Length: 393
Image 1: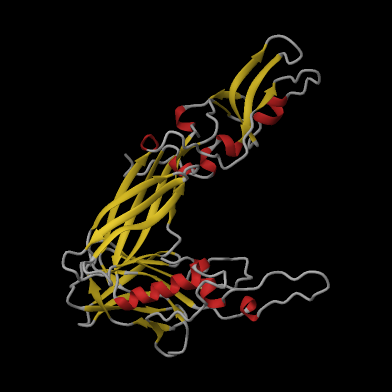
Image 2: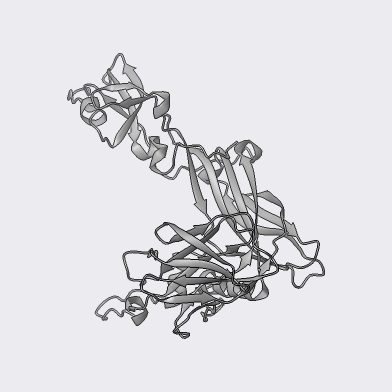
C-alpha cells in the first residue's frame, strides 16, 4: 500500500523552498488547496487470506495532520456475475472481509459508498494467479545487508510482480537495568518488569516492482527488497521479514511504475518529471473527480525468513540511536550531601532509571548510590514492545 507521503506528492507536486531577506513568502495554491481526494488502498484477495481495503482522503501539504482516514463507508466486492461480498470496518478507515476464495474465471470490482452518499466503482479486473515466492536471500556487503527475492511462473503467465513486506526485529536497550523505583524506594527489578529486550515492527514504504515481460522465461532473479545498514539496530539480535507477493496485470503494473516515478524518483533535473496518475477507480456521478488508487484482484503469496546476528559478519557493530551516558547518583552526594537517589531516581515518573548499585569506600567520591542513565537508554519499551510475536522463533 502506498503511504500518505506519496499521496501528497501526487496531488500537490513538488514545492519550492523558503524565501529570505525582504522577499514576501510565497505559498503555492497547492499548499492551501481545499480539495480532498479519495485514496483507496488494497487488493481484492481472491484466495484464503482476508481482503483489506484502506480508505482515506488527502490532506494539504501545509496541514498539521498527515493522516485522514475515511470512516463510515459501505464497501462491497462484486463479480461480473452479480456475486456480492460485504466488507466490515474494523477500525477507522480500515475495511475487511475474511478469505473469499473467489472463482478465478470471473472478474471483480470494488464498490464504495461514502457516508456523504458519494459512490465510487473500480473497473472490473480479471483475477491474477500469483506464483509462490521461491526464496528470500541476502548478501552481506561492506556496509550492510541487501535482501532480495526470487520467484518464477512455470506457466509463463505472470510477468508483472509487486511486493510489500512487514519487518520485525528483536533489540535491546543500551544498558541492562537490574533495579527500579516503586515510587517509595529502589527495589530489585522483577523478571516481569524487565525493559531490556523488546521487539519492533515496520512496514514497507517504497514501491517494489519486478517484470519479466522482456525475458524469454517468467523468472525474477534477486529482485532487491530492502537494504539494512550494518550499524542498524534491526540486526543486533534477530531480524525477520514477511514478504507478500502480488501478480499484476500490465495496466496495474504501469500504474505502480508511474506512481513510483512520481513519488520516489523526483528531485533532480535527471529524474522523471511529475505526471498524472491514472487509476481505475471512478466517481459514479462525476467521472472527472480525481480518485487515487488502483484495485487489482489476485492471490497473495507470503514467505517469512529469520536472520540472527550470529549469521552476520562479526565486525558489524550496532550504533545506538541515542547518545547514552551513565551517571553516579548518590544517596548523599560527596561535599553537598544532596540526596540524588531520593530526589532523582525514586519519585515517579523519573527521567533516569537506576542500573546497578555502587559503593565508593574511600576518597573524595566516597559514598553509595546507583549508576543510572536516561530512560531512552534503559527502557526499550519507549520505542518497542516486550510482547514476543507468536511466530517468533
